[in-house]
Length: 400
Image (cartoon, rainbow, N blue to C red; front, side):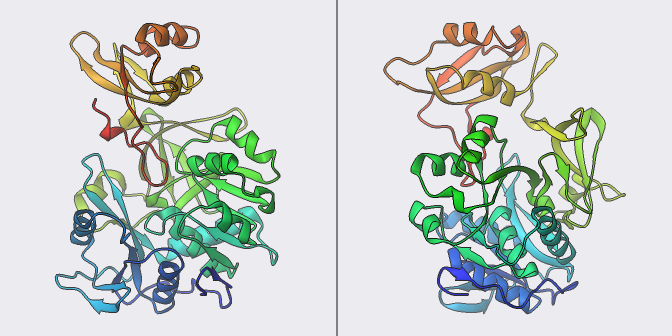
């Protein structure tokens, strides 16, 4: 792999079992991708650690996953206090639960291969294709792009972040983005027409954003998936080959197939909470089937606000309030209420801080499209909505 690209070559993904070691890769961009590919080629599992993260955050992650080796600018060396992984494990991806403590998602070799092949089939990749990886490799979104290239031999360009110059320099035809990056790309002006397909995941894709992007040339495909499923397993509402989807109790989305994680590293208690005996993964997301058989993701179950016995979807309220001309960004959460159980709270980034929208004004605006229990009962003005590097809202950091 060169400084900023990988020309494919020998296809990988033939491993079914590794050697039980877990290498922490503390690099970014192309060097990180090269280290990951080298490790996979030798049958070693990897966990990517962002060296730019605060030291305390890196230490918590390493303590949670206990890798056997570390690769950084100084080379590869063993680590103390290590615990081998199962030979089934190809990668560990860190994700945070409601407490904010890191959980290590153990993803398998079988899942790596199944995910890469299924995505390649869905996109009908060919000799003219090339991937651009501009998402962080410490998240499943970026790591999965590297895996697709390694398994299928489709060439890969790796850049540490999405920048106009890097995109225009790339000859890629395929890219995975989150909605925030897609919106920034449209505003910044890189030549998106070079892409024939843009996968968008990590958060819901607004239709107007999708239409804006497709007007520049590429086809935009909304995806749904989790760190626990090697990323996106549903494209445009349709499960990928080998992926089963059904709705369980309270319409919770359940996923089954080789892409599903082995479990949470060193946390059998958490694993048992989400993985059933028959291999179904409880996603914690609420879904529904549309009339044409497509899956619609409605809401995170943990994010629902229950006010007066009514389930209030924060994303539904946010979609309405975002249309208000005085709202630049918004997040909705729930606060304890002695009468209603919870009340709806809108955290608003005003378009004009000198003249922010009022609670009365937002309630009147919401009255046109939402039932009374869904109207905000509090408005909190904030400078920014907390989000992950991938653009996903971090509701637990709201002062609810």
